[in-house]
Amino acid sequence: MHVGPVLVNPNAMVGKNCVFHINTGLVAGGVDASSPELGDGVILGIGAVVVGNVRIADDVTIGANSVVTKSVEEEDIAIAGSPARKVSNNGRTKWNKN
Image (cartoon, rainbow, N blue to C red; front, side, top):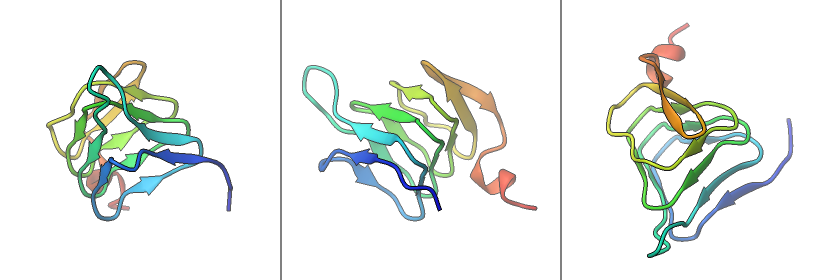
């Protein structure tokens, strides 16, 4: 088991069965200081951060050290990078089949 910080803004909304690896964060951002909303089954890789008024669809996998600044409407995909963008059609449910 690895121990490390996970920062979640108290106004953030988190769906069922989400996974937060170490050094991840859901933080407020922007002019109105809005907070992120995660759908069910979202995975945040090590060091990933979701910033501001952003909605992440169900079963999206967010790669390590990614910075998410825009909403992701498509379910069950993988995103990565800074800024994060779609990198694969294989999200959580497809990735966890085997």
